[in-house]
Image (cartoon, rainbow, N blue to C red):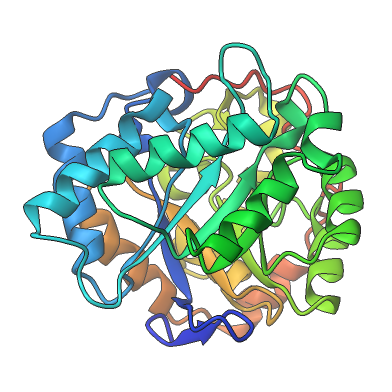
Length: 323
């Protein structure tokens, strides 16, 4: 697959590769990922991403309560600045202590991000997780957080504005009401779940770029369910893991790495502009690109496509922790 080819987002001049890399784990979030990530490891991972053929980093103000962006900024400084062609995408976040998400908080969020990253602007800026705000009213009202996001584009703080969230019932009305350039959905368009189908179709109809994040269901299809008994960052019982085990059984039959099938399921859909893969080690870049290029026979795809996929919200019972 053409992993290094780039697609321009509308007429913004911003181009993104078919594979991008997420950096939430680099903020050292053991409650979410079950392991710790040191500053040294995080910085080396960021430097490897920014000097790769897929030099795109997706970050957020709240990943690790700011640690992820701080470490990305350190890596950029060690590289002597952002490499030519590298793309930075970050997000406006609510106040993580109070849940307040109004225009003033949106402004504080981007100012903190720019300071941590050590840059004057970013290529892409998303409104992040409005469903977790104390109220949607300050987000969507006239002069609210979304209006502030579009104002930031006018000011040159970013070139592309987007929406990055989870709950489809919250996102779809917002997508219908605003002309975003790009959308991020996560954990909701995978080999076992298509909860984001309506949202992806809507975004495609509006000529928005779509970034599909977390194709491995929070790591289970990358690491294997025998040793990693979790699904979308939560402990999982046998019933929850059963659909993933069906994927693994088919992949074993056709000698296909489940991670390759999970990644390519996203990449094969022409509505998906880019797939975001979270990584926490430099060597995961090479592994991801190898999975993207792995030759999967059509007979395997026929078997995988025949599987029943849930349309329910996979994170309905998730307890979110940014630390």
